Amino acid sequence: MNNILVIGNSSGIGLEVTKQLLALGHAVAGISKSPGAIDNGGYRHFMLDVRSGQFKAKLEELAAEEPPFDACVYCAGIGEELDLDRLAFDVEVLDVNVRGAMVAAACFIPGMLRRKAGHIVVLSSLADELVSPDAPAYFASKAALSSYFEGLGLALRPKGVVVTNIRFGFVDTKMAKSPVKPFLLKPSAAAAVVVAALGHRRVRVSRPLSMALLAKILRFLVGVRLWCCR
Image (cartoon, rainbow, N blue to C red):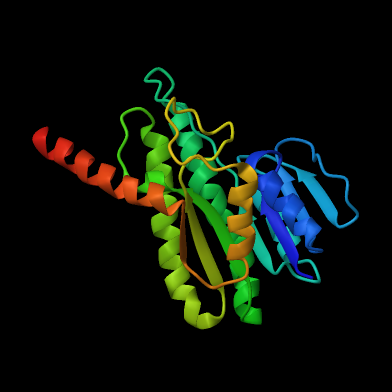
């Protein structure tokens, strides 16, 4: 049995990850801005927004607990279409999608390094390949998240600490707002990918593979479009 923290687990992939981990017998703690929806003796819930000034303090408190957390899974994320009259929201997107994950890593990795064991998992997106005029903050946040945590994963790999960046395509959650959603995954299927990732040491996981290939094609087409705009 492992001790695992899931951040952003009131709905969607995070909630499904929590349920699957509990079903496997793990002890799980969850953090989300909404009340916990799980009644299980192996579960603890903390209602807290990752944008709150108390978020870092709570993570530092949890990181000091014994027994320590073996893994931290960061599922929190927000995103909306671009609103030129509300650009301040784009700052919040970066705060939740990137800064919150980095704060979590900074709180838990020092202890993991001392133990030479531990696993950080972040949920990114295949959108990290692309540039979007419709949701530039969301796409940029995923590019930053992937770049930082994959680099961090390579740096920590020789020291016994694993970092895994999971890049999903469309998952059937409230975040999937596009009218066209090819290769759509169910939240339970996406959660199974996350749970499986906790059992290996891969730095990058991309699912579904068909969507990953499509994203690379779209990246090329976007590059051509940007070149033509010179």
